[in-house]
Amino acid sequence: PVVSRSYHPNVVDHYDNPRNVGSFDKSDPNVGTGLVGAPQCGDVMKLQVKFDGSGQIIDAKFKTFGCGSAIAASSLLNGSRDNPWKKQIAKHLSLPPVKLLCSMLAEDAIKAAVKNYKQKQAEANSETVEA
Ligand code: FES
Ligand code: FES
View (tube, rainbow, N blue to C red):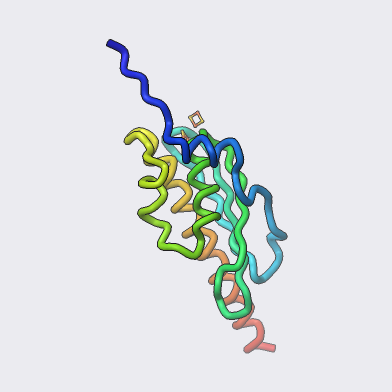
């Protein structure tokens, strides 16, 4: 018999109505940009985080050229930025095993965005020292 598997309502909700789609100005020193690709399917996700002066994330935006699971994961990531999001995403969305890599794309994207922000900060600080 053919086993059909439907997506968890949370996936459909975030796919239909993704939160925080869009982008920030990349040159803003308080914005970190993460651009990652999924080698297994070629999809791409851009995720940006905005920090306040004290290093707290205050906002996030994303654009995902990917499947529904990846869009849902990036949307959820933005919505849960104050929570320990790492393990939550896949659990909350109850993704089938084959789609777990799609949700990990969101995790990689936010790591890359935070790294980009830290690099920018480090560069800005060294410029201040030199000046
Ligand atoms: Fe089809 Fe990613 S492989 S959307
Ligand atoms: Fe490519 Fe999901 S199939 S991100």
